[in-house]
Amino acid sequence: MPLPPLRPRSFGSLAALLCACVAPELAPYREERPAMGTTFAITVYAPDADTAEAALAAAFARIDELDGRLSDYDSQSELSRLSDHPVDTAIPVSDDLWEVLVVAALIAEQSEGAFDITVGPLSRLWRRARRQGRAPSPERLTHARRATGAQLLSLEPRERTVRLRATGMRLDLGGIAKGFALDEALDVLTERGLPQALVDGGGDVALGEPPPGREAWLVAVEATGESSEPRPRLALARAAVAPSGDRYRRALVAGRRSSHILDPRTGLGLPAAISATVVAPSGVLADALASALCVLGPERGLALVDSLSGVEARVTTGEGARLRTTESIGFAALVLSSRSTPKNTHGPPTARDE
Image (cartoon, rainbow, N blue to C red; front, side):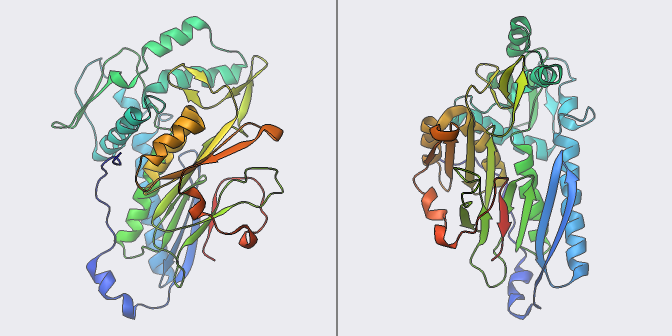
């Protein structure tokens, strides 16, 4: 199955490539800033501090710009204002929002509805339920589900307009926007002639060219067993890694453990603990597919992954003695030997250049 078409990504100017042989020695520069409800950390290799500072500022400015367009928490964002239009109105959207919506629609189709950005009404309903500690009534669930479904979102490519075809629809890009921001920030750095970079957005990671003198970045991912178990490390470059799951984020609602991940097809949280780690050519794909895999489960989710070029994944289900991990066909080839893996505790993916 072909991957969704994406806007062509730049890989640095010809001048930067021609000058590489005489470029000054590069050093790593790192900066963290809050964005998109989490912390973004960017590492870039640059010839000097001034160059790095300007590039980092531009990359973070791009992330902030996207947050202002794609957030469903900001009532003034482009995404939020989309829902304020009358039903079935042709609404022009920015290039950024259009690209995210196109990729989201393709993943929704390929995942048979396991990934669906129209879950906004359900997301809001369950956020309120977690705050109040009380499950939503069947009537409220039914009402929210009537405004949910990928078939209710129409994309019109010729005019680049969007139509919402049901009253009360709201889009939620929480499972894809961060991955898109990673890609765009990495593009900003590459366009400035600094392709050896890494962008980490709350655990989702986009990787550019490897650090000087290295063949790859090393990305530590979640261990599959006890907390004392070494965290596997993946050797990657020009790729992205995204984790998703609820093994450590299950709130109590009406005395029952409730997943923060919703199954768009039922309107309910996932019934069992699950987590997924996806490696893909871009952050936007890794982010969306990680969410889809948690809903699909290991068998159907990994069948989808194995049908996609350049995508690998691992899915872990259960807890304690019932913990079970399943991997896509090529995932094991990305993992370094356990003998070279240091012991680390659970947590989001981290990247190193050693």
